[in-house]
Image (cartoon, rainbow, N blue to C red; front, top):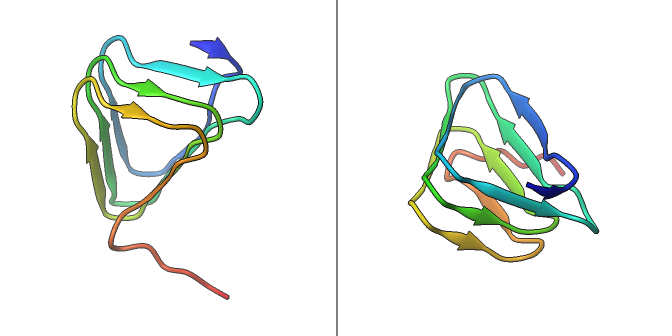
Length: 82
């Protein structure tokens, strides 16, 4: 990890692989896992500044995946209230 720890709100199942690297100097990464949802981040992943992951059903990030600055990941079960 380099910089700030991600903000994690986990009400489901969160699997974090070995050697996952979070880089958050400018903007904190946010991870939300809702009730009955499953988030899996594979071994050796790199998650950059300001990434937002919102899991309401299931998200699997394969091993050694690199996620760019300020990327947003939502699964198909996301509910948006406007």
